[in-house]
Image 1 (tube, rainbow, N blue to C red):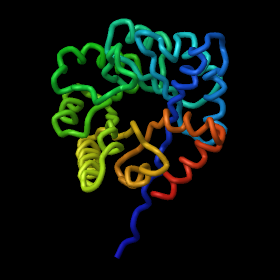
Image 2: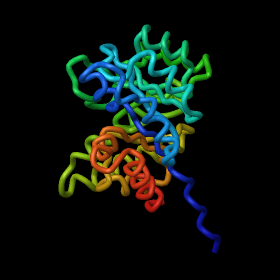
Image 3: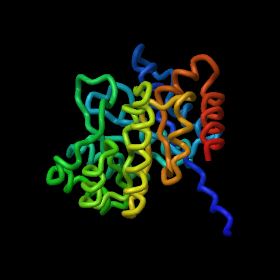
Length: 247
């Protein structure tokens, strides 16, 4: 009988968008998302996620350069697949670019990217980013057709939208968890690194974190909200401890 192989450490990417949301609510430069990035590094986070939206409602263009200069953590740039955002990504060369759907009227990213229905539109953006050495991720629903689209596009990473899991109740929780687990396994079998994120909290993160194929979770809004009460470093350290315990 062979010993069970240890499950690799699950990375934690911290989305700092809503530090910038608070800053922009009043104008000026406080609170500074760069300071948040520095705290993420100190608290044991493995990466910084920032979403540069068309309307610049939180992260601004100049924030990207400052964040990259402030910490050695990899930057995961969430972005729409538009010519403008591709050019910005090529200028700043983040470690990764996560392509997400974007609507002006939405408060947050409401669902996964329909990669299966937009392969021809996405292919040029994905190709340009990959050619520049930027690791492309597609933010998708945990569905086989979306994983298959990521394979066709040559994306090395997918991030599964866990909003349906986070909002599920009763028997639906187990069903949504199984969807994520099954699709993480499918992605991994086909050479794609699976990540997950959206709506994850102290209360629901551990079942997701226990999925062995997942390599990274990206969590933002909840941690920034908890930071109001306990501080950002404490909030990150507690999430990190829960994720580690699940492995």
